[in-house]
Length: 161
Image (tube, rainbow, N blue to C red; front, side, top):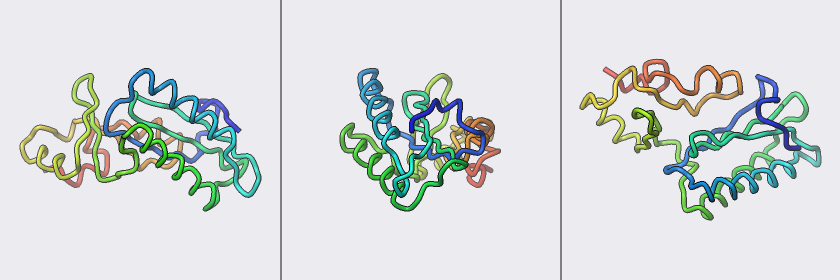
C-alpha cells in the first residue's frame, strides 16, 4: 500500500539506492510511475506493506517501510531487490554498488568509487567538512538527521586524516 513518505512513522525502515548519475526529467516521471506500481502491489506473505518513497537530488531512491503494520520478509525484500535490479537494466544505471561514495561539491552531487574518494582525501580534495551521503541509515529518523552529514560524522571518517 503506497503512502506518502512524509506520513510514515519515524521508525520506518529505509533502503537507499544511489545512482551513479542523475536521472533525466523524463526518466524521473517514468521512475515515479514504476515505483508507484511496485509499492502499491508490494506484499509480505500476502499482507500489504505500507511503504512510500522519495527520489532525492534526481539521484537517490529512498524506499521506506512502516514495520509497525507488517514487517518485510525475505521474499518481499528479494522482490524489492529484483525491482531495483530491473531499474538498473532499464535505465542503464548502477543503484546497488555500495562501494561508491556520493558527496556534495558545491551545488552538485559527485559520485566516485571508494578508491578514488580515498585518493581525494589524501590530496585534500575532500575534507572532514565535505558533506557526504550516509546511505547506511536504517530508518526515517536517521535519514532526516544523519543522511547528509560532514564526512567527519559518517563512516567516511575512517579515511580522513
